[in-house]
Length: 187
Ligand code: NI
Figure 1: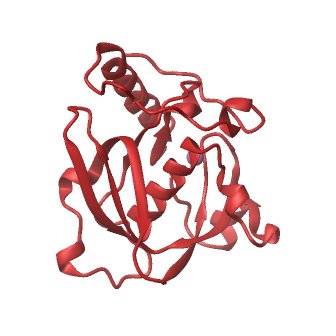
Figure 2: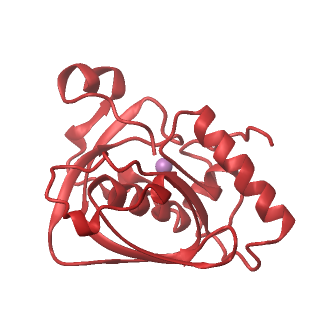
């Protein structure tokens, strides 16, 4: 296990589309997953995508605890299971469900010190493979949906700031936690 260096905004790997993972169970992929989880936890992040650690593969890890949904309205039947708390997802595909959008402040380990208000679909379905190569398919709302979309954007070379519609809502996190809402973890 190792803590990896995190690429920051400006590094070209953060603007480049990533390649599919060919073999999820390959020992190098397993080691990368372990290192990404360790790096995410060390950096107090809610998620991390492989390009953020200079690896151009379609692989993300994230933590989406059950209580972290935005704005309520999540149905009991759609509360994700505790097993969703730490997810490893390879070659993900996301589709939005319905027209509802939600806005929330996002941060990113590749854009340290800042938060920005981003509007995204509130309800999504995502599919991909876990670290064992088995298929994953889940519904997500609120914070869970936001984390997944943010992380998967990294695989297409997109940072959250590119999703912002109002740049007046790009703030230093030291200000946002005083003036807007309690600080959230970085994605
Ligand atoms: Ni990020």
